Image 1 (cartoon, rainbow, N blue to C red):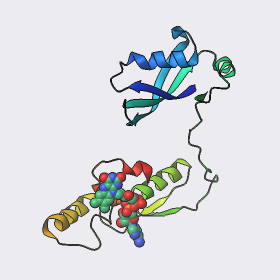
Image 2 (cartoon, rainbow, N blue to C red):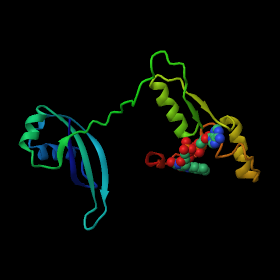
Image 3 (tube, protein in one colour):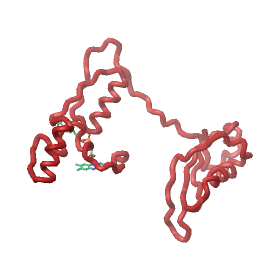
Image 4 (cartoon, helix red, strand yellow):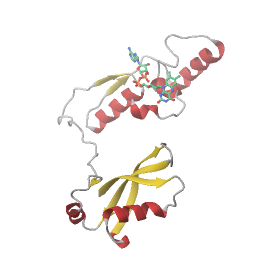
Length: 172
Ligand SMILES: Cc1cc2nc3c(=O)[nH]c(=O)nc-3n(C[C@H](O)[C@H](O)[C@H](O)COP(=O)(O)OP(=O)(O)OC[C@H]3O[C@@H](n4cnc5c(N)ncnc54)[C@H](O)[C@@H]3O)c2cc1C
């Protein structure tokens, strides 16, 4: 799979323009492009013409030949291997269990990864279950009654339980 960066297209470009741009950049015939997908799309909002800037991943027949032919073209490379690799595996027969404190997004994810690595994590949280803390949290937000042990901060799911779905977590 090849990665092609900095493909600039107008905001109202037809869908077919992506394929055409890849074919042109790679210098291949249309039928040689087996498949493609958008890896990233950004907006260049500078005037005079606001445009999309794409990073595309493309599957073609003979990648090695294309890379060799375009070896001086810095905007074409192999798609980096971003697959996750576990840092370790649980030793066979291990009876020791890692402990995770907190069932917020980080604690739940840590527990998941540990389990996938073959450990048997124990995950603790000091707060209440989601159903109970939802009542407590509404109590704070609607009636200004704070339960210091069960609120938007403390309990199953952590603060993530009450976030409104925006995507800031991806950058945390
Ligand atoms: C009102 C609100 C709205 C938000 N909205 C968004 C949003 O829209 N988008 C977004 O991306 N982010 C949002 N956030 C931020 C997001 O929720 C946090 O970044 C995220 O929850 C942090 O995850 P965490 O696992 O590090 O910690 P937390 O979610 O805080 O989880 C920590 C957990 O540890 C537990 N804990 C703490 N001390 C102990 C202890 N001594 N023993 C046992 N357990 C303990 C707590 O009970 C809690 O469950 C929001 C946060 C709040 C408060």
